[in-house]
Length: 230
Image 1 (cartoon, rainbow, N blue to C red):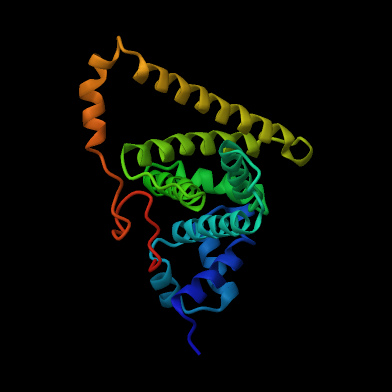
Image 2: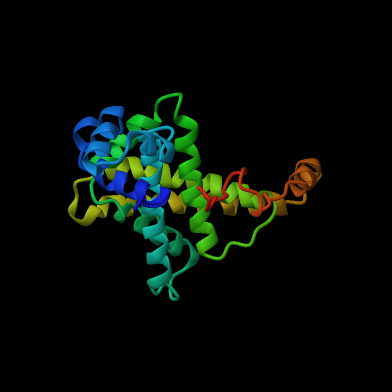
């Protein structure tokens, strides 16, 4: 029985993970995964037209799914919203079973030809976090929330990769500081907007911002949208 495309992709990904620590998310690892799965090369190329890149993105999506499951099952009702955000980022990092897989992924997505796909994956993670925590913004804040969290997530990820403290305690302290910095910026922004002396100068920028709307969730080609068909 021929496996479905999704089944074949997951089989290839499971096999690929054994080779990535040694050969990276590369064509060499991709060919080894095909051989391990005893899949037809044509089927494997149809499932993953970009080869290892598609499997690296599938691995990232698998981590996102694990994060969402923890957000749904963990009791965070007593947490402040900023702490819920920190918990979600922590859940995402703790979904990684081997840091070397992520290090190799960062090497892949640092290449100019794949940088866009890597940035989109990070944006998707942050979009999923905001959606899972109940964000309903539909204006410019939709973008600023995700852009800000993308910066926090990316910097925390880099710190985490080099952290050898027990239970990654230094990473969680770093994450708390980054979120505190964001909260200070938001406080300052609110004070500026409320300042009667500055309001006349902000009229045009605020009007322009009010014209920005969040992307239509029915569209699959916009930032933040997870296409279930891919």
